[in-house]
Length: 435
Image (cartoon, rainbow, N blue to C red; front, side, top):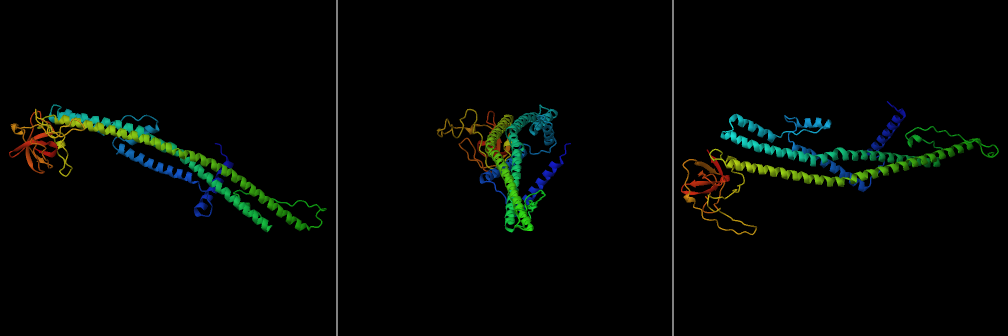
């Protein structure tokens, strides 16, 4: 091990000197060199960027992985793979796991039973939803989380390192300024008093051994002077010369410190100005993150619509539309999905053929000719008020009970409702089917 005692001592002295300067600045007993306004603004902007990027990064991680300490040990596994510099294997999502459980349960219940076949159908769509979620997580991690992490762990660390170096250069500059100031004050004091002994401990952090000796006096040229006065005059001249040399040396060190400070300030400024390009990069990543969300939610919506249609196409007695009719009465009234009529009848309401279409009356529907089936009647509770759009529909009042049934070929979003002698089509979303 190369142990350099001289370098270690020098570094310790520099550290101590900087610590003293920093403490005196905090106490207000030492002057501090202020950075220019442009550099201060860049530093403030960089700090703001770092703080908010870190918060957005952490919260995005929570959004994409709400429960990091789950039974799969997701975060722990990712940590080890990251440290080993290996690719993280694809992990099954909760939706895929739920779908697999449903399909396994259907095998035990019997895939031919109504419940078993429904479990298989729903399980398949749950696995599709889980696959879409996994793709969304992977895309978001690559296009959004990774650039943010690279900034925090790469660019920001470089900026922080250069800023610490700039702060050290500033402390060194202020230390040199203080030395020059004290040296000039001591020089002026020696010039005025003539007998002040120079105290270099006040101007420099290292000891100097001062030696001054009067020049040998020539006996021929100084006959008119007293020997003691001559020695005193020579001592004063030596002191002034030493203080002058000390001032020159302090000013030279000040010029070097100023040059190093200016160079480091320029390096730091260039790095901080790169924050603007970082914002542009993060903006592009944010657009890609939103596009991934749009794609993911659109897929989920499509899968759920397909699942709803598939379940609704089954027999209403075996698969009641409870998933679309058990809404709470206090929620906002939904609009009926469709106003399809019985076979051969024209749909009620608006018939549109383009952006400038006009309202055309629907064809007459003879709902009274519809005969109720022998079986399949159900009671239903009305959840919201509903005004009939034409004579084929039945107006409803919230909380009333009516009898409903379906007929072959009828749109699954509508039922035939009866209330006393009144009969008409009613939307399923406004009803709670009772057993």
